[in-house]
Picture 1 (spheres, helix red, strand yellow):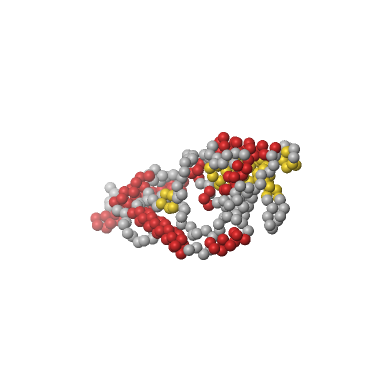
Picture 2: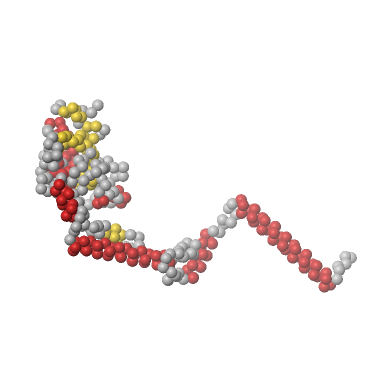
Length: 315
């Protein structure tokens, strides 16, 4: 059975998660103080990443959670200095989607550029950010997948935050959700929808810049794809065939190269003629047919010789 706090029947932990009650302040629409339970533990993903040893995994985060909320909660509100959290990765966020190369990438604590680039096999460079249309919401709400990963700058900072959370559970009062973040994030309620209505009609310069950026990236990707298709039409495969792609027969491969690859393919297949049983049968049939053909040819030759020289006499 999980240990319980002397001042609350809520257990300190459950299923390996430490429970942190959060006090939700009253609102004009609901003027009653409520309690929300946040669950956290050291991050242990199935595929280890360089940042996992210095990360905390949070479950059941409030639906209005932002990076400002989480950073403020796990630093100032639990009695630790600010600035020890590197980033907060919310589940489902496009910018924090897991990547396969993260499992083998080297950790980097330095500042990164705002634009990330991906290099494809055809040599095209695709900029992942800066091509979307202007946002119509000033703040994202967590409708589902209420989990997040908090990455600290180092392992001691993560251990200190986790220890402070457990200390608050045993001896302190629940922290107030959103305390200290007033004025740092957009407001909810009617102000959110008023701002949403304004953002639905961006100014002409901002919209034109976004469209031009997207079309430039699209044209570059199309040009790179065309170069890749042209390269496929010029290089024969292992069997000496040319890949049929759209765009006509521009730049066909040299006949000598295709013939050379065909000869190499035949050499690879040597020694495999009698691998299957049916190949043995077919080979015997071919030999028998060849003998019959030669026998009939010899009979025809003898017949013609008799007609020219007369009948043979056996002495």
